[in-house]
Length: 341
Figure 1 (tube, rainbow, N blue to C red):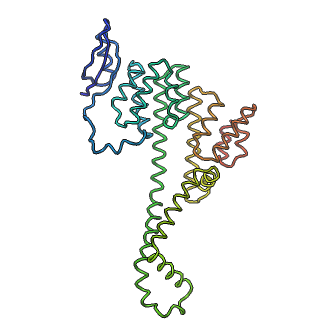
Figure 2 (cartoon, rainbow, N blue to C red; figure 1 turned 120 degrees about the vertical axis):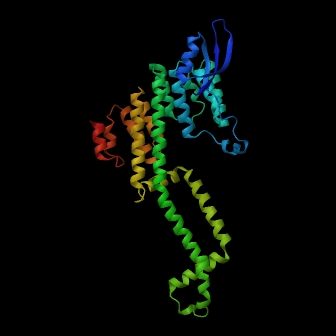
């Protein structure tokens, strides 16, 4: 049976701590309440002990999307069990292995203790908690149903993780084929073709132009490989720097929507992400203008971001959502018609 570590306060105000066994965290909460104790913290006991210190290098990064999804799911369960949000965050923080995420949760607990709303505590970490996450939490704080909203956020995050996993999986096969093609070409030019140069020695003038070009390229790669390596590294670094510029990002986002092999995949990704985000925010009670603003930022593509910003401006002027969408080629006509209906 699972064990849970708790900290509770009795009627006299005395704080006690210990470990108890229960079928679930809800059952553990009921046991403590049956004793007349107020729960300060309740979390699964760490049966694994401390992590292997040799793996510490793996925890120097910030929290992943899966970390945030797990945190949200655990928080929903603990809130539903009647545990205060401060105690729930503290209990989860004790179990988190990522040191950066642990510090974030500890700071969030302090913010909540100081009287801040949970959504205000999340605002400290905009790179970890998206605008959608924060606004859905804020909407639940105003309307109630906090644990249900956390469940919906966790489900949304889980779907986004699965979607990105499918996209990466779909790109693995083309990536492997491309890598093998480049590797085979390099092998032929640097190991196989040089062996034939002895045969062609003294007969260069009689060789056709394509053969001369291949021999020259092979000779360059064998004798000046370091120049080629430096050029490749410089090209990759230049590409990364280009993507950090507005025009470079725009070019790359356009390219992803025009390359035949990937355009359908990316198009479906951006559309599903945008519409699912809108649906979640509208169901959470977030105002339409805020919903459109958040959707534009979460879309993940400059062209789709511009499209949703145009919709935002149109709605702000009192127009219908479907009007600017009808002029955009980024959404299928069937989707625009359903939105208009």
